[in-house]
Length: 188
Image 1: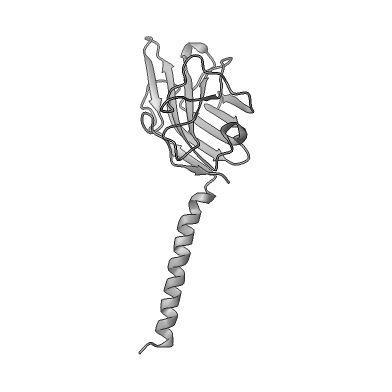
Image 2: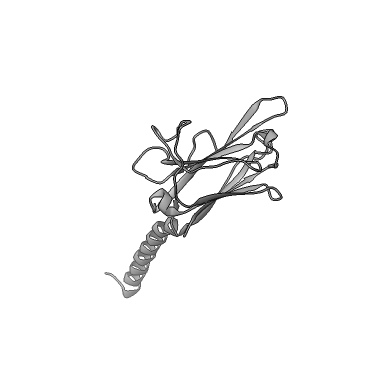
């Protein structure tokens, strides 16, 4: 025999499971901003990656926190942000290579092959993007018009930073690990 109380409990339990399933699937779609941490001090250079914040809203913004970037070109500091915009295709579709010192250059380019290469003759895209370096806060920020990336619904990134040490050796730091892409960040 089924009582009204047990039917009510079963209905409430089913409603709770349905709500949990809805909340569980809805959460990633609301995540227009995500921050990814990297091991601090794993390379002995000011370009050492500490964290990367990805914002996927009206514009795509990638903010990279370094240990200690400096204005001098002698640091040899550089970085490349790889942007994956197509979940059906392996590897990133775009790269944003730049220097991390004053007066250097940057570009947004399409990748080729498996997505990790772009070659010396890559042609910069002619759309809206910029790089800002804040030496006081040790931050580099890239801002990209989503139209440059094909207006993706979600993106993920891999970040590589490199710098020249005093002895001439070049050190490299990848966010997380070599060619490791972050989790997807949905458009907000």
